[in-house]
Amino acid sequence: MKNLWILLLIFFLILSSGCQGNSSSYDQENQIIFFEYWEEFSSEVLSGVGSPPLMIDFPTYRYEAPSNSLISYLGIFGSLPENINPFEVPIILGNGFTLNGDAGGGATSSLKGIGDLPYYPGPPTPYFLADWNEKGSIHIKPLYMISFMDVSLKNPLPPEGAWVDPGNTLTFTNEEIQATAISTIRYTYKLTLKNYLVLRDHCLNSSW
Image 1 (tube, one colour):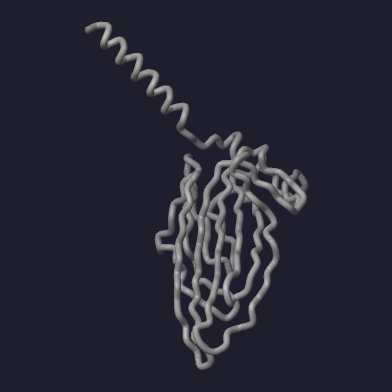
Image 2 (cartoon, helix red, strand yellow):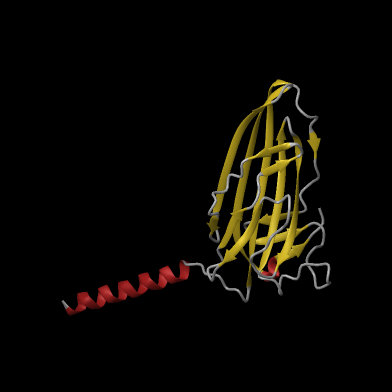
């Protein structure tokens, strides 16, 4: 019986050690929070005539999951005043926008270094980063209606906002059909929120 208890104790210690090794935690000294807010706007003309399609620019960064790297095409990372120094800020905000359907095509994006929260990007950005915690989770809240050109849609974020934990992705979607004297159009807005913990020395500059 004594030997059985010893074996059970050893098994428990090995299992506990394995669980601790597989857990991930926010190491603020060596990691930076990369929080991405990506909007997708599309339309479908059901009848009549809609606005001319709009083409927008290309994204300016990418996140590489295999190497856990955040890569800027514009040389945004560095120590100059106009750069983002990943060793001095706790959060990098990625803001992206994609057009689809009859609305047009293309995508654009940008990166912003943030020293503390709350952070208000300013209009017409329909959200603000309200808070964060020791786990690296970000609390995002709605501010305005969704506005693009002459279209206004309900913000799909709940009034209380949403906490996005590291490694998680949240998606919110709103679809509306709007009719005018000359057209009936279905608009779809999709909001995707992602949170990554990136090693500070994995924020890199690269060419296209």
